Image 1 (cartoon, protein in one colour):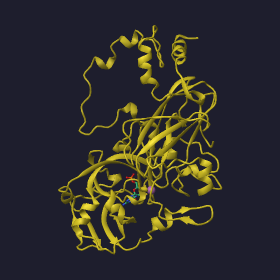
Image 2 (spheres, helix red, strand yellow; image 1 turned 60 degrees about the vertical axis):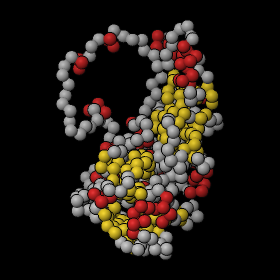
Image 3 (cartoon, protein in one colour; image 1 turned 120 degrees about the vertical axis):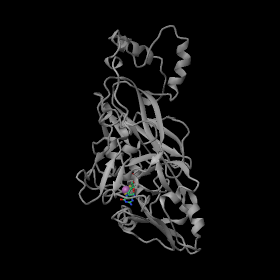
Image 4 (cartoon, helix red, strand yellow; image 1 turned 90 degrees about the vertical axis):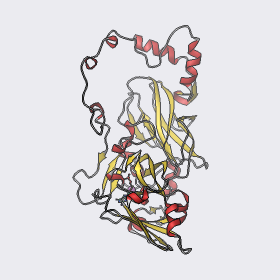
Length: 441
Ligand SMILES: Nc1nc2c(c(=O)[nH]1)N[C@H]1C(S)=C(S)[C@@H](COP(=O)(O)O)O[C@H]1N2
Ligand SMILES: [Mo]
């Protein structure tokens, strides 16, 4: 046994599993600092003895560095942390780009890699000429320019946005081997800043007959969706900033509707008008595309809320565990209803569960990062995460989900969305070689 293995073996022998197949207590590392302070011999869980090389000056520390660009982009060594494009040649059809969630940490999605879906390309909107109108069943129709909106009290909040078609490959009858980005990359989370819609509606006045509002974008598809009016009184807002800077062109510049927790398609970008109406308009995207086909041949209409969901981002398909030992499981959980209350992790395909540590204070309708240490003994394992939100909504098993919502008869293409709103428990199978596969458990 090498020195590395010996050091790690010594450290691992002190770890106490809390659930089957090597799951460790979520506070193992914090507790360890206490218990190990009194231990006679040093032992590290990720061990390498300090080498002479590590104590030598590296070459970049001996010369002047490069210039500062006006707008910085990631290190060239992190050039793999990019979106994947479904329509790279910008053919006149829908374009999707997926967030590399398996290469990110924390809970904010950087603006450069926030997922984007546009149904007819990214419009080139001059903010000085853009007008936003509220009309229909109001006392008085009003319009605003960007500079007008900026004179209102702005609010900032975290919110995830998820396309209803995210995770659609999970409806496949057999598991599709693809990474987190390909399977679940149509969700991102940002801090959005803007003006509450309720404030603007106070100014236009609301006709009591109004029950819905239709939001429409200024881009070519004139994407329009009906939103129940209660959402305007609740937490809908017109966002102008994304993670502190003006909205990105792909995410709605100069303004978009944010409907925290609602399906991405309703969060109309390039927002041009909101019309108050007494009934939904049954637009293409709500009557045809984003309805929910059910096994009995009927469809679930007006499926607005993205339900409680989680997935493990590491380890996941595409990574390989190099040797048995200690690993940190990490992933994302979120619910369109509110806060994440807890996330449970299994390493034995759902037979036993342990609570993951939640990073920071879970925020409503936003990403929550979960983590738990795991000692992989080199045998087969199935990793799963199951999130529960503050209202007790729990992610269903895939079997239960599919019984209610159906699955596809044939393996779909990764880009097709033949069904929507998949939120069941996901499973990563680990082979004794350390290879990771999408499995149904
Ligand atoms: N005006 C307009 N709004 C739009 C779209 C669009 O093509 N045009 N795409 C919708 C879809 S399908 C989704 S999933 C979300 C994606 O938001 P994002 O691109 O900011 O991630 O925007 C929605 N709003
Ligand atoms: Mo979407």
